Length: 207
Image (cartoon, rainbow, N blue to C red; front, side, top):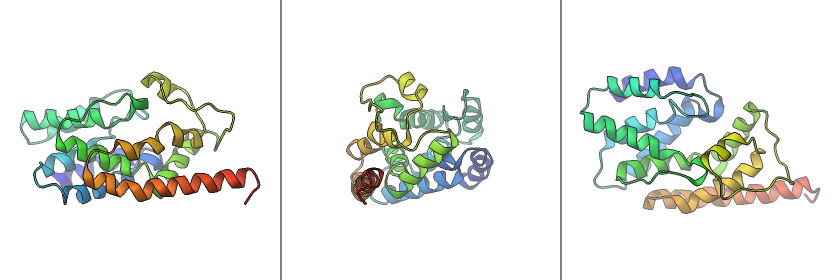
């Protein structure tokens, strides 16, 4: 069932830009497997399916959840498990700091796995890939960083890519929910700090 779902979602993600393509999904799955190895009791199948499906109806690319619901409904699992997957997917998004609570270990694993791919070297690459796809500026030193905003505000304003680090990416380390996720986030967070320091020096002509 996992392999079949991989083939189905690959076709979908190949239509997205490089920040949310099938490679992103495979990296998140890899992160989830690393966290699963340290968790004694959880439903691994639910975690893997939720990872594969979590961006199918991402609001950045789709205005409808119809495709997500169709794929979930096709799964040969219980209705309770299908609803669990729906709940996990709904809780993954940051939403400008207006995220839904994660109440199960499976949801915590999927959220941490996805957020690990938003930070570090990969996170940097994805941020600029998405910004490029949307025609956003690399940086804007006059732009005000928003730490309190609604989901609509978060999604409607096309901020510069570097601003996104301060509005979301640098916050993720402290929002990790699993022990392994927190450990994995430390080095990636430090790398982003180093990158931003170097970038600032180069912008000012100091390096």
